[in-house]
Length: 87
Image (cartoon, rainbow, N blue to C red; front, side):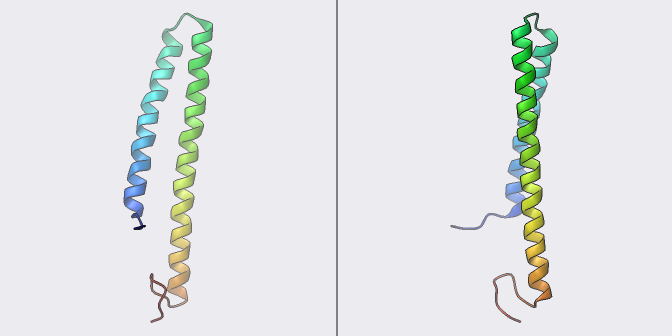
């Protein structure tokens, strides 16, 4: 399977996080405008869960890029190319 570039993966993460931000805004609007306590509680809970998912996505993508950067630095220190061959 071909390896996807980090830019493409990071771009998708940003797009999904942006869409989830719109959903959070809609949940907040429902909380503000609704007169029913149950609907308000459900919308608030949904907004909190979505924010947790957004944070997890950011942490996951940041962790992955940090691991790849560390591996690249380690390979450079050991004199290895990105494909694993020696200089």
